[in-house]
Length: 366
Image (cartoon, rainbow, N blue to C red; front, side, top):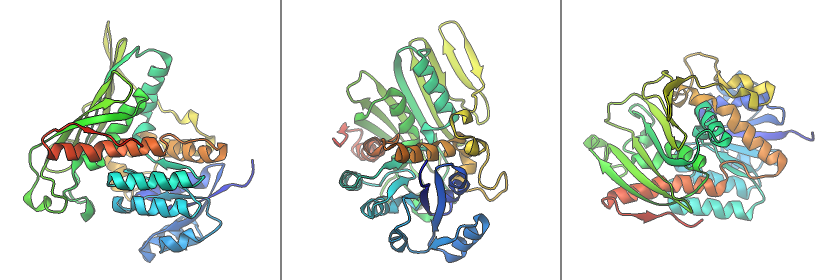
């Protein structure tokens, strides 16, 4: 192959989990890192032997040697940084969600369409071993006709950075929305969502959202399917769960309700527990180990999202490989920019629906 892609990672909390994957990927050079805190920047840079280091995002974008930027900043910076990076001629991978408003999603799409660059929202939930297993069931025909999909993401966010406090549950819904829409192969057309319960009073003012739980029904575009998604972030007693269920005419799959137990498959004749296999064989050999290992190989310094989410189902090297190969092969990644905007906006307009008592709201036509 030709020249390796020079990748820059922005944000070194969760973002650090991806550094050794880019180091080891045969098509990339882990070229630069960016972090506002110089102490942390140098700590990570020294640990991984990365020479190019930036504390200023705009300065980093001036570097003509950078081909692609992987953004792991706080969510309120995703839109601004994605747009700036594409305008600077860089390919963009961005952690979820794509943005925090419908208008921001629209602006990202405008920047993407004006550029000749790739944009990919790095949605871990559509590259977990569970998702890849059910995708295989679908593609082999074993599920039969998909009849209904359900997603859930319940997580206690106490102790996370302050910008998370009081966040409307559906504003961070792509982990539960993504697998449903991806397995159906459809975009969302409209939603209706209800809020339930109430979070602590001191958490409400930041976003003006009182709901402990939000549950949305999603009508899929050009399809007879609908999906249901449930989210909670605060004041709800539930072990971490980031799950999806798929009900088919021949077989149905249900995520385990207790962490580390086996998932369940239903057929017309029996119910059985299934051991979900790893899918490292889909990856280049040099990054296969990262489906089961994090940056620190079991040390206690893994990022909270990685440890709470059980390593995100081995998804990280699959995400990197998809982003990189989309650039190398000059094709759209999955999810692409339009899919990323649709999945993100499901949650944004769902919260709007909840504030209006469940009013049906159409998704933007991107």
